[in-house]
Length: 373
Length: 255
Image (cartoon, rainbow over all chains, first blue to last red; front, side):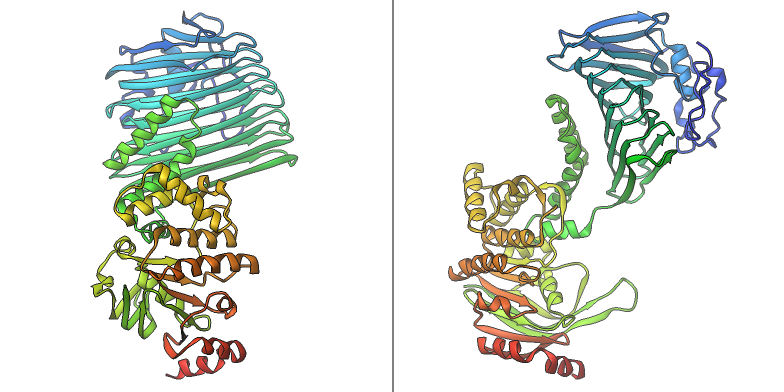
């Protein structure tokens, strides 16, 4: 597996399976400039994979689960690493999980992958490939918890007419570091919903990306995060419209509270010359609840064709709106309760879309717990 | 029997810098439950400032005077305490609060004002009946607060809150503006409905005399230059209808 030569646009120039193709980042690079490298525990400098993240799968009966070695030909076909840590993870994992949803099968319940970190003291690497064959449908939950220093790549191969809904929940302990690339490749008329919920961890950097192989693909990417004092939660999205008539929607919302709570959101959308009839919109909003927080929100839209249905983006970060609080208080609702209602409402519009009841309730409870702090 | 007493109220609005501007320049007004008062005046006369100052909006600074409700110092209370004490402000521009549903909002407000949570079934029934009386589509209960509501829908929703919260004193800030005649009638009926119960004092702030065809005030106060410049009965509204505010604007400016 050599160097992938097809250059992505100026937004993502490089991709390779070989770690050596990516110099060790210094922090000045565009893709690393917001990330505190000192807190990466050498994941970007070839940290040896001595740690362990246990993977448990609770699968729907229709879904085939396999643990495979590095040489399995299905691995790495959908996704080529786009940065050094991703390439490092690809080079270093020892075992991968492959989930297959057979052609036309409709999974009767969500398939849950629990990734349990046992020790953040040494690095662990992982790889997951989810293959949804044509016209099949499934929901997959990636539940990350425990203590870990973990880098992984996740590939979603969504076949023609297939539907995949994924929820990646980062519910790590405070000492965890997690860097993950989650790439979806969509066939003709395939649809993909990627939900990322980041709550726990010292440093979490998730990079969801979508590419389309054929027209008619539809991707919805949602994210909810709650950043506490000292936490760095980063989400870097890339939607690559390289074929005609595909759609994408991105809506990421976060709340921040406490000293040095840092949220980063990068939303890259490329509409290539071939991507005529593209319909895309991306949105990021950040609600700043206290002093001392920092938000970096950067939407990038690169459009190489004039023939689009729609292309837009928006980013807004700000404090709780005094007028919102005044309105609720003017109806007798005490200030603290008013504040909770506004935050709950703001995040709830996305949380309500989480289709798996158990996860939705868990996220709701986690938000309540955050508001109690 | 409740009494709202406003004495020599002076209010400034500042942008945080030194250029605070005095908007209310000594307002005296008494509103008792069962009474309906209209405050009328030209744009910029300070009518809305009076409404927001009573409700406690942080933008307005009280520089002198008192506001009491049954002898209690309203100005010492937080915004929510004022509402729980029995004051209500129907806003001219109700804000949109995404993700907070009308029913959740109403139930939280009713719980806060009444001091205990109503049983869900009882509450739902009560809300439905109140919505029905104001010709509000039942689907509104599940929609985000004021989000995507038309001007008329927002105003009806304000009156809905008023009817459910049953305040002692209700201040309605230009509730009639932006309403077509049908909506105006529905809103006015709502105001008359709780006015007729005799437990609520109404302070109706308006620029136009139109609403006074449907809601009859016993007292009319003309507001200009940040104070009340003339008072009378309903006949004063008719004078205003014919003559406009011109002479008060001059009087207010020169005082």
